[in-house]
Image (cartoon, rainbow, N blue to C red):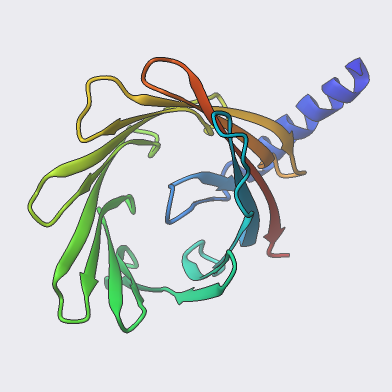
Length: 226
């Protein structure tokens, strides 16, 4: 057991040394992923601790180009959905925006000069705003806060994040409609691949009163460019 643990620690440390300059941030959650990522395939199911039920696993596959930009996302619950993403750049090569246009609605992602996602807008095909989100970061480009808004400007959800020493989220506090007490999500990673990226994650959701309500189980497999 001790030798296995030591091997895991050394493997993770070595992966971080060799991939420090090679990492991407996922478009949807700004999670850091080490290495030259080609594809991430994940599944998620939610176990309700109050009702004793488990949801149908959701399969979510995201594809990236060689520069780490999201190009396609495929989601399967019962039916399957495919979304295409096009990223636009300025003349200096800086990201300006990413667009996903389904024909019925469009998601527009806006970036700052450092490449951080700072705004997301969902609009109809006639450009009517459905909802929007704002994002704030620390100096290491870790996502600190997100805020979701209705077209009226009302904030419906604020999320605050805390990170571990690997750069992975270890706690999330969700404030619904600016409640004073948050729902607290605690992240527990138990498996990592050869690049140091997590492959198994369990998230415990606690009520504002501190009572465990649910467990989200996530597994993922990462494919890398050679």
